[in-house]
Length: 139
Image (tube, rainbow, N blue to C red):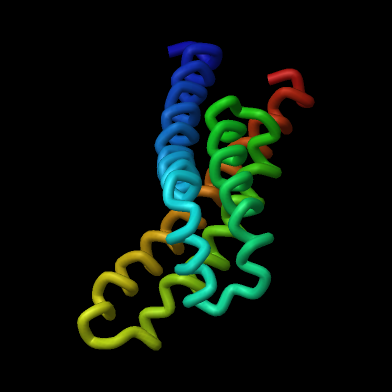
């Protein structure tokens, strides 16, 4: 396999990773938009300050970030923003340590899912950086 074939193969895998990582944000953002009132109430229940401001920003980040990730536009920046958002969401919305016994396992799973997604975003950031270095080096 030549270096170009290897890079094309890696590019396909990276594209697949970006699409798969984006799906959860696209679905979540559209669902929040479709259930706006209920989501606003949920945000308030979580104690999120200024939920009426945070909700549209969250929807914009989830849908916009998901679309930008699929498009491959400024992957490092988009992945970093989504990683920070995902980590903040883990601590805000999936506080398993404060959950009752009936919710504990679900919240723990969602918390760990978010942490794993942050790991995926870190790989996207590192891969995008490596690709930029290779392009500058002429490789």
